[in-house]
Length: 269
Image 1 (cartoon, helix red, strand yellow):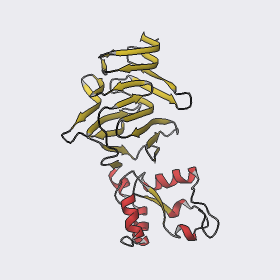
Image 2: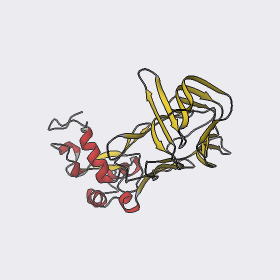
Image 3: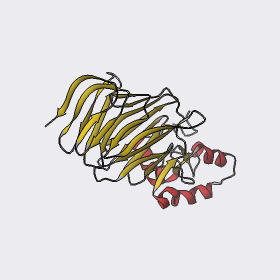
Image 4: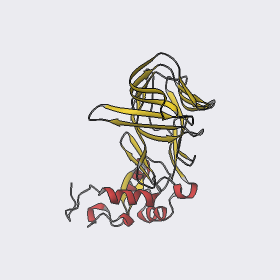
């Protein structure tokens, strides 16, 4: 719906990206990365354009307080000038999604069936699933960039990501993180309560191995490439396992019953 000046509520993508960076990629008050775009001054009904200097990110809870008058526009302006995530260096979400078994986790076209552990590198669990007494599941994971810095950390379902990433976009069930070359390095889609899709990963592991995946939604196919520091790994269009991937001293092992379809396993180069 347009306002009295004919301005659409649809904010151009480039403007949204500028607003996200200005806001520190999360709610300017609390730093949660489940957010909405809030026109500060003027309000949307009186705005003639989408000025990124006058629009910020707020979470649904803080947005409700603004609508009810519990937070005034002067306080919003003050928070936008000094977002909390820029003070502490990260944005987070305490419980981004609720998961239960049976659970399917896809990394590109690697399908993990009801996993407890997905990836272990030199005895360090990088992606794992824990159960708790109420039947819900806790996801724990760490994702690194090429410099060995953490781009996303998930601790017992609390999602935490550094604001040093070039862009962090949350669209419904999706989280998209891009580097300073504006390449997507992590794209996650959650499908509660029984699935998580890591649609795209370009992940550098602590030992120097590389895990890269891509999934084409239209063709419903994709690839996964894992290369260890000894140039041993796999390149596959589809792999389904009830186990996990273990990398140790430059070698890798897939545990548990596994079905492999197309590609290479072994020395890749």
